[in-house]
Length: 280
Image (cartoon, rainbow, N blue to C red; front, side):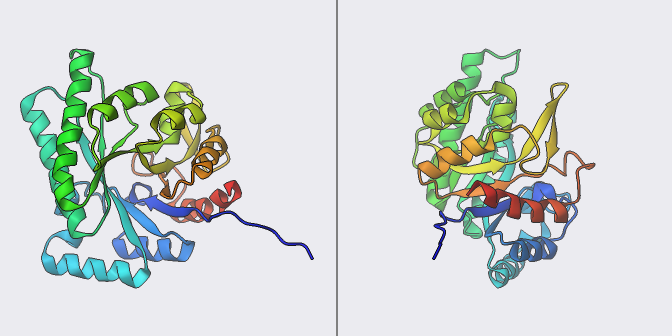
C-alpha cells in the first residue's frame, strides 16, 4: 500500500495591504475560510496609523476586536508601522520613534508579538555611516522599549537598505533579544539579486518573519504576479527556511494599496493559500 509523507504545514498570514478597503469583519472571515492562521495589520480601511483606528480606539472597542479575533480563531501576528529610522534630523527622528512606541503599546494590548519598522533610506545629503548608525541606534532604543511590552521590533528589508551586508551591520549594532528582522524575499532579490541561500546564511540569526510575494522586474520596476508566476527565487528561499526548521509565518504581502490595478484581494488570498502548498 502506497503512502506519502508530508512535511510540516506552513503557517500562513496575509497583510491588510492586500485589502485596503475591507472592514475587519471581512478580513477575518476570509482569513478563516482560506486557512490563514494570522493577519498582519498594515492599515484598516485607509487608516495607516493604527492607534487611530476605531477598532482599537477605546478599551471597550479593543475588547470587542479581541473577541472577534478569537471567534474566527485568527491571530494578529504583526502591526506594520510606517516608522523610518534613517533621519538624522532630531525632530523627524523623534516623530518616527514616537510612532513606533505607540504601535508597540498597541501590540502589547492586542497580545501581538511583532511591530514592523523600516530602516529605510540612505539619503545622499547625509553621511552614510552616520545614517547607518542612527538606524542601528533607533532600532536598539525601540528594542529596549519593546522588552517591557513583551513585543519584538522587526526591521524589514526595505527601501534602500536591502543588501545582506548592510542589514547585518545594522542588526549587529542593535543586538537585542527584542529586535529581529522581516525577510522580504522579493524586495531584497529584486534589487540586489543576492541568492537567498547567501542572504539566509548571513541573517538567519535575526529572521523572525517572512514576507512572500512574486513578480517580474519590468523596466526596473516590480510587476507583481500570483505566486509561482513571477521570477522571484521563492523555492530556494523557502527551501532554506524549511531546512533550518523555521517556525515563523509565511506572510503574503499583496501590494493592492500601492498598486490598485492588481487583481482583487479575494482572488489573491485564495490563490496564495493554495499555491504556497506546492513549496511544501
